[in-house]
Length: 433
Image (cartoon, rainbow, N blue to C red):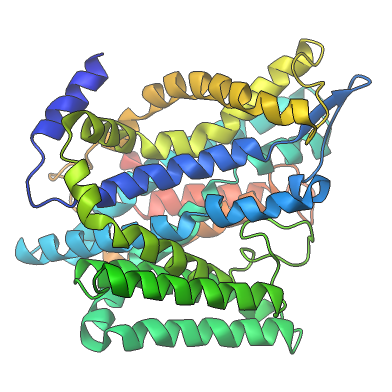
């Protein structure tokens, strides 16, 4: 009740010029991602053992669901809009890049570091209990799935001031140049079987999508009719890429381990993002009027106040629930996946997870609202960028290999050390500033 009251007070004090639809889309997109992850969990307890197969292999038709549940492009577009607003505000207040970046890194990285440190401790305890390395790797990789997004988003934030200047100077020509580079990376991937350059598409694809947020902020996306036309064209492009091109149907994950639209990112994500965004932006005006409703806006403010927490910890909560149910003799896990009974049980499954996630999110969410403190001098931009890059590289390796995985024994020490060293270098650990 106290948190609701605080959110209600904040909602009532919202400046009239704030675009509430941006906050609404941020909250909805993260909630959809969470529900999608929970839905795709196909844990099955039989004969005293737990097994899990990819939902897309068990029921290929479910790949269509990813066209709805893959909403990370919307989050990056919203991030582009928010970063544009933040950069404009920093310019008006004569805040330099170092101070601007320090504030953004603090809010993004501190909650992330808590999750990493927690799973380091969990993995260490599992090792001491002689849990098999395969199980440690499986659990930690699953729990760290949300971190890949933040690793690339932090890098996009670092580049945001430069990208915004290029957008202001070149407009959509800058956007299309990023799309063109991403297309070249895909061409190398599929035609020349040259795979390694395509990993750079984490920048080209997500920066292009992030740029659409700049266009939204500048009012360059046109009216509802034009937006619906753009959305329709993007859908047609996506359809052609998937059904007449080499791209898989699933927009997140894939039944084929060697081919995915997300690892590394492909231009299909740009087409999907434009399709979704065109539809959503076409209804912006009525939605902004709708969000004048204080109760609905309070819910939006409340979700956004702990959005990082619910996103980062939602899979950890699911893993802990599965462990408890396994120890209870597989209670609730004995329904064969993708059967009718399994689908009918999904609403209850999600309700239980929501019930467990909320108190944990309330516990850790104050980290999101901590202020870096204006009295703390910012470190040099170079040191912050190097530190953040080390954090992102360490997180990327941990999300790829998990704990107790990797090409060498105790390989996870390397990415964890990178994360800690990056946190020290960028000043996110106060004692080392």
